[in-house]
Image (tube, rainbow, N blue to C red; front, side, top):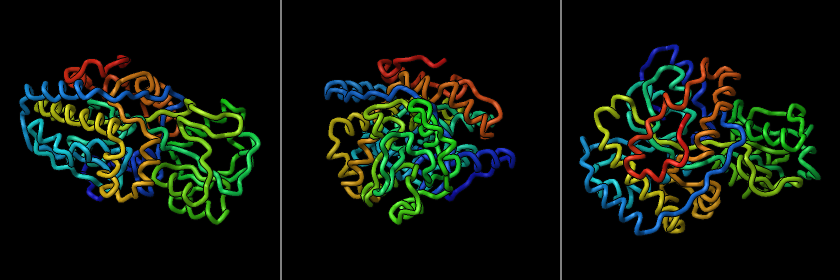
Length: 376
């Protein structure tokens, strides 16, 4: 995202210094933080009949405007549904001419939203917390995916652990302020690891991959696609926000929660509610396609994301594609602990209520079954 909107200088300082979200698909940027432990989202692919019914109901939606620019990121976590909806013609099916604008660096979407050049975008809910704390008028209209599984720690091929506590004294390469640090902290709390005894080295993800292969660090912590690349280079997956392979904890965990979301400016919501509904119908159909036809979806996505089919298979298996508002979204990704953490590290001055940066009424109108838990 090389195109930064013009905005008030104080806001620019806040957003540009804090919208470096590890979960955002940023190629090299340092990151802010995510939620503490939260229940991993569960996904169930809709039946073909349900998908057909949703498409039929979309016929009754008459968009206020047909021409839409949807800003996303060239990243499997952020824009998989966007790409599928575009390539398979789902946007056209609901009467929209969508320009799917994929940028390379996720953090730059924040300044674009604040500057007004991205009224409709896809990023993570943490961006909206930060923007709302700076009084930027934007609302999340739907979650798209639980992506905490792509925030992970990979050990070097020489690292031997008898227990998680053996991480004390080891060196981990990690970008300053990376979201995955929350998973590390929560792992430490659950397994009795004093994470303050871990030696953290500020390394960009690509540099950490190289350092891990050379043996200069014991482990690296970041996000996809660098996690998969590190594993392909001989690294060992240790744990993520949702899964652990540590000796004393194997299986699903609740060490982190972060969601990809679609957000829209307040002004756009007021003027174009039916257009947003149509977008949501198309994205829901794309979500179902990804879950029902994963192999076919990967073949479509791989060239667009500049990844091999093999790499993308691993990456997408770490994500949960679902537009459901449930426990891990409400009390995990948007829970009080997230805001308090952002505040404690100086990323925001005040913690906004989740209801102030959400408008889920249009999602509910499209499919009320997607709202499992109400925002507080």
